[in-house]
Length: 417
Image (cartoon, rainbow, N blue to C red; front, side):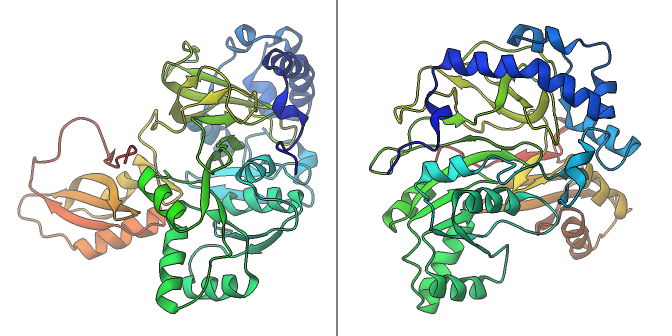
């Protein structure tokens, strides 16, 4: 059985860098000719001169607010998509809203190699519990698994007991979903007396895989690795492991991506090892995002992975450059919390705290109210659910008790335990 998905993974780093930057000028020229929004964004740029990281760093960083403004002015994609990619394909809507087109080919988000790194192989049945509703999360893994030669059960989110009955019948070898939902399935299956022991491998994303949870999965015979992905780019980095299933340090950057770590709020690359924002240039002709600022923080690791893959490694997800926070695989934005406040005239301020309740993410919205007001906290909770598509608890805070620090969303999850 081969150890690597393809020969790209074991190129000498210098060769990979040369290949990427040899392809970049032509890619930019073609993309500018087809995507009017990109041509406007990069107006005055000569693609032939963008042949190095230093030259790339002179281009502006396209951050989420820029992308949303472009899409609002020129819906749905802001003129950033190749029109040829929009025929006979999918379009997705992520929170924001942000619109994303599916790319060309059998594995447009490049997820197959991350599944391969977990040990998933052609012929395996994959139970895919990412959401198939509106956002591309499930399709990212679905397309990659089928390109790898797997049989995919599109389980989606919810209907836990039905999912368990399906898995007990299909006997899948692998699971794909958020880090905590696999535990929900396994625990409920034990309660129902159903056997899900066929699941030996899992690729999780959309949230943090806490060490304690990974250890629990290992004790239950499930080898779990994680991938870092965004709806706009696909799989950006993924974990590998030794022969005993122990993960190697860091996450390996995916192929066909140029990844920079920049100082938050700027486009200036930082030194290796320094924490900064992940900025990605994806050589995806269907949706050519150039210097796309993900808003996610990480740092480059020195040296190569012990697994033999030669791609640059990052430490993994290290928080957000902004306050957008991922909860149960979905981003919650400060604008959504502001919208909750606007719906309820008695509420003057709000602060969302994200924590852990056992092995699952939990949201609590702390609200300050006008003097003498008695707001309907259940109604506020309904608004929170309507606007974020996630359930959360709402509690009343004393007037003046919420810190005056500009933070609308606070992440109190401990990523080291």
